[in-house]
Image (cartoon, rainbow, N blue to C red; front, side, top):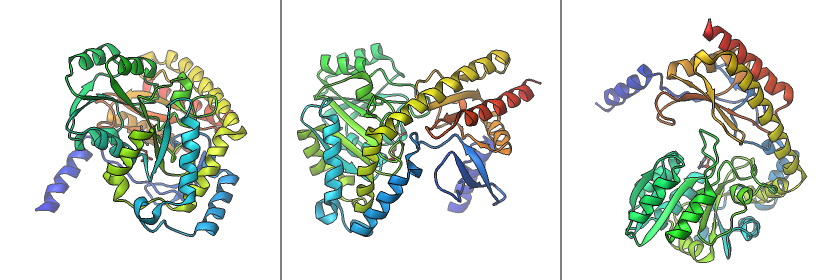
Length: 406
Ligand SMILES: *Cc1c(COP(=O)(O)O)cnc(C)c1O
């Protein structure tokens, strides 16, 4: 019965062109990566899909740090953090992050998690108790949505970037604890949330601001500290979540908040307490990643990203002006996430397949990840892309648009 039941659901997904495919890479993360096709044959593709924005995953210093970390610490952490899994390497990463955010969050303290998904669940479920109300931005990442589903708090959603509507909802709320929950950079749109306005509302309504900066960390701000640095924000009301699997080129995540909030997370976040701590060797390497983000590699990487973003936007503007009737558009984004909205599910998958035949991989993103009718190519740029790489993408998109228009 179960087999037929789930087969029926799989068939329904296929009928809507919503089946997802797991692709297998035969080489490490880099702009040119060997990836197996549906036929099982591995081919080198020019990738516009990883979130390794600064190209650190392939950095020689990170490789070396992973080796050193393994030599010093061996394999796994052996236990959850409060039992025996917390090491000096974990401590050093948390300490560095607390220092980074001291100018943005008074009395900042940091806590490490194995993934951003877990960090988001932890924050939203621990703070979103029965006395709280969560005010969730409608384009939030799945992990924030799942956190809100698990939380005991009342959950209200506000329309994308609609500060006035949020203001009204906050004013109408009688909850004892009010928590605004938002991505800093929307993962499928690349837009930056209006954080200064959201923080002003938090202050006005005695609310708190949970910010998930998965895509801003390492990328935004002069030192790569993300959206808080980008906007120059400072408030004890900010609770920051960041991931270390994207621009930091490794894996992991962190929460930074006022000491008392952090202490409460440590005491009560179930997925922190009941899950094995990350390997100390990884934390050792993360220290190097943080140094790279802050140092020259990061500075140069952020400048490179800016140049490639400008090149892609200018090229796409010219291309789309020639093919207005296709109805494609590039979402206006100042981050490395540059989505080209195509519309239909089958249409976007055909376009992605066509690019792949030409040796370029850009993932098609469909509902329910994005709203119906806004299926898109999610182009992500990285500092290791060259000008020629971006030109190659533009040329292939121009050829595809020409064909689609014909
Ligand atoms: C990737 C992502 C996460 C999850 O982080 P992981 O470390 O990959 O689990 C959370 N929020 C946003 C906005 C993301 O894009």
